Length: 503
Image 1 (cartoon, rainbow, N blue to C red):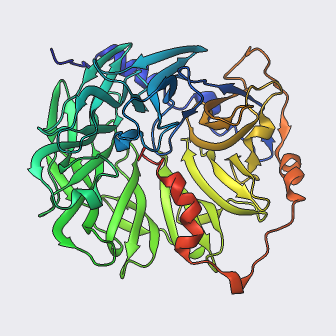
Image 2: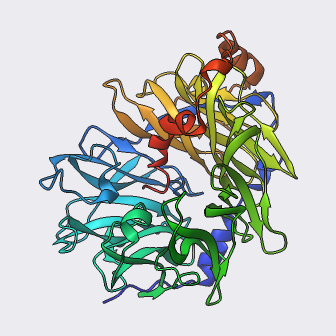
Image 3: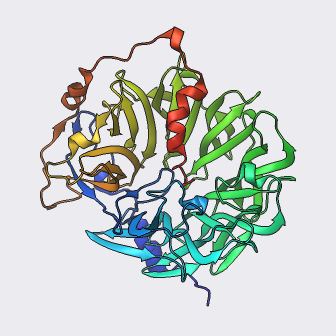
C-alpha cells in the first residue's frame, strides 16, 4: 500500500510555531557571540559520516539527519551507484541516520537494499533520501537507487517514472517530495548532462511526489531531461531542464535553464545570456538564487530571480566568476565570488542590492553556505596557511572560526565546514575525529533558547578579540605573474562541489 501524508490543523499550528523565535529577532550584536556545544553525530558503526551542502540536514526542532559508513564493506564495490560514490567511504556500506536529543537511530534501507543516504528532513520530521533496493539496474549494471521516504523507522519506496533509478532532493512540511526519476526512453544526452543528479541510461524527468503518486513535471521546450531540487511550502518547485537537443560546443550540453513549476506549469527562468544556469535554492517567497553563465559561457555570475523582477545579475566582488548558494526568506543571498584579479575566492552576502565581502583579508578562499532568517551566515574557508575552517558571520561583525567558540571537551579535534544553520541558531557541518576521519557534527549555541545544556559555557564571547587571534597570520600576497585561471583557482573547491546536492 502506498503511504499517504495528511495535513491537519494541528500540524499547521506546529509548523507555524517553528518559525523564527520571537526572542531571537534582532538580538544578535556584531561584537558579541555565544559559545557552542560541539556534538559529534557519530556513524552507523564505520569510520566516517558526512553532512552535504545544499541539502536540508537539520530542521527547526533540532533533529539532524545524514549518512555515514557502517562497519561492513560494500560487496558491490567498486561497481556502485554514483549516488554513493562521493559519500563517506564509498567502499563501505552506508546508512542514513537520525540524531535527536542525543539519540542515534540507524534508518536502514529499503527491503533488500544495502546502502542509503539522506537528503532532507522537514520540520515535521519527514526524511527523504536514496536507498538501494536489492536489484541491479540491467542497463547500468550497478545497484538500483530509488527515492525513499522515512516515517519514523518505516521506509517507503517512492518509485520511478518507469525506469530503474530515482533520487529525491527535498521535501516540504506538507509531505510533497521532489527530485529526478528515470523513465523508459533511451537518452543520448543523460550521460553528459543529468547523471550528476540521477545516474540513469534513460531520460530523467523532474518529479513531484505526494499522497503516494509520483507526477512527471516534464521539461522545458524540446529538452529531454530535467530534475527538481527544491519544493517550498507553497508547493512551488525549482529545478533545471534542458530546453533543446542541440549540444552547445562550449558547455558540452544542450542549453540548460532553471525553472519554477507551479499549478501545473513549468516556467523557464532563462539565463544571464549563456547556455547554462542552475538555481541553487528557492525560498518560501518563490525567489530563486543560483548561478548563470554569461554570453559566451566563459564566465558566470550569481543571480536572484523573482516573478516581479525576473533574473537579476548580482554581479561579483570584482572577479569574473561567482555563485549564489543559498538565501533566506527575507531575500538575503549568500555564496562565493572571485575578487579583482581572480586570484582568490571570497564569501559574500548580498542584501538590498549591495554585495558585501565577508571574508577576512588573511584568507585565500571562502564560501558562504547557509543563512537563516535572522541573517546569521555560516560556511567554509581556508586561511593563508592552508588551514580549512567552518565560520560564522553575523550582523556586520568579523568572520570567526566556529571551532574557537566550541566549549572545551569536544570529541572532535576540528570543525572544517559549516553547511547549514537553522532559525534556532543551531549549525550543521563536518568535523574531524582524533583518528582523522570526517564526522558529521552539530553546534548548539549556549544561549537563552538552549538553557541548562550540560557543559555549556553561557558567558559572552568578544567577537573582535577572537577574530584578531587569527589576524596575526601573514596576509596572502598577490603575485600577478602567477595568476591562475578561474578553472585552476576553483579546481580544489570543485571537488567539494560534488557534495553539493549530494552529487
